[in-house]
Each structure stands twice: as structure tokens, then as C-alpha cells.
Image (cartoon, rainbow, N blue to C red; front, side):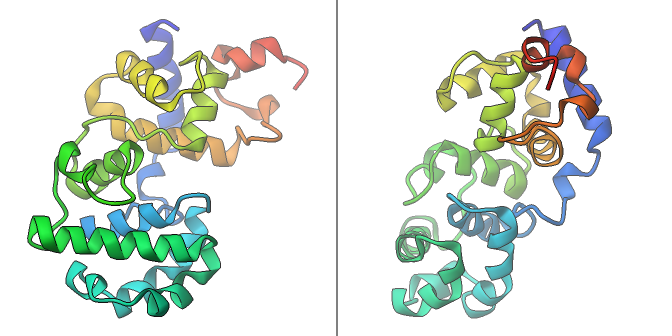
Length: 216
């Protein structure tokens, strides 16, 4: 896809979802510590489900120091509703212990340092960097961003690493963080996985999927 077409699509979506970054259903609001832990917990579940455990989790463990001292058996009941709760409890406690051991209890603000934390990959690191520190180091490719990048025509692959590179090549760096939020908003509201709402889509005329499936 040409950059000018990609930017036109982004401009339309940005106007359609002007408050995507501040959505009450996002896990990306809060301190860098909160964003980090909630993003780790969000694997294979919804942001809405994660937000249900936010208050009880951080009431019990408001800092990396407190979470690092926690017992898995005490954390599991709090996050039990998320699924995979045993592994997730282990991951967030390990993350907190790494923060204490290597970063004086603070969440680091570089990609390299974030990737050294258990349970943190590029997607999580990009989310923490943008929403925790306002840094556009890369583009967080979650399930919505991957689906829309392929459908719209931003990328021709299913490989999240390649999708991130394709998106970074199409869009200016200052837009990378908001691009993720806007694509997620459109994925939730219109371009669903099972049944995209093409007839009411604001970008259908520029969308590869719609051109191939105009009857949708």
C-alpha cells in the first residue's frame, strides 16, 4: 500500500475514534508499573476482564516491592477470573522481582531493559513505552492490529514482527502509539474477527478485504 493511502485511512480512523487512547475499556491508563502488570495479564483475555481485577490487585500490591514479596497462592485468587491464572501470577511476581533486583523497583523506559523482564515481549514493551513514558519506539501488534493490518492491506503477512516493520515503514514515528489504539478501537467496534461490519465501515473504499469481498 502507498503511504498516502495508508495516511488517509489513518486520518479517517483517527477522526472516527478521537478518544481511543483514553478509552475506559483500555488497560493502558495508570502508572508505568500498572500498565506493565496489566498488559502482562492481558494475554489471551480481554482488557475489560483485566480491568475487573485492577483495583483488588493493586490495592493488595500497589508497588513492585509489594508484588515481589507476594506468594503465588495469594495472587491467584485475585486474578483467577482471567484464566491461566497460575502462570500469570508467576509471571507478574517474577516481573516485580526483576524490577526490584535490576531497576531499583522502577519500570525501565528502554526496549532493551523491558525485554529483560519475565513475561515481556515487544508488544508489551511497546505498550509500556508509549502509555507509560510517551515514547514511540515501535508499534504494538496485538490480535486486532494484526487482523486489521492484513485486511486493510497494510501488510501481507501473519508474522507480527514483519507486520510491525511494515506499519513502521508506512506511518511517521510520532503516530505509532496512537495508530495501535485507533486500530484496536476499529477492530472492536467494526472490523470484528468473525463478522466485520463492512457496510458501515468508514474506510471500506480503501480496504483490501472489502474490495475482495464487496458482498460483506
